[in-house]
Length: 152
Image (cartoon, rainbow, N blue to C red; front, side, top):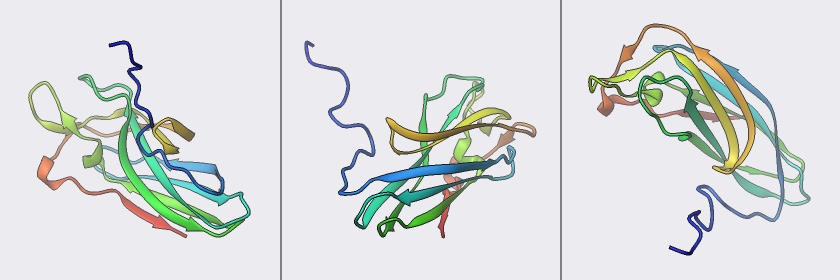
């Protein structure tokens, strides 16, 4: 009980022999039935090649029930040469944003969402808030669509 309550390392923590810069975050809001697209440019700012795991988190800011403060909805491991850049694009299906409401329906509700991209749960490099429109959409949990990732 006298020890620290925080974990020794945050989720997604990793070390590298190089450093990375995240910039130009762009979020194109979808709806409760259309996907949201999140893209960011990652640059290896070091002098040697390295791998980076780019992580996408989301916060549902106005849900009808209590939700996690931050949920991992996608990630991509990329390898970049020194000074090389890549654009990482996540396509988040609204079923990835769904949860069980008070009536125990698995739904995606319209409202404000905060998308955050970073190297770990505690190392967030960029954030953008969007409003998803539409009506409450019901999904089946067994049919959740995985987040698609593209790099170029």
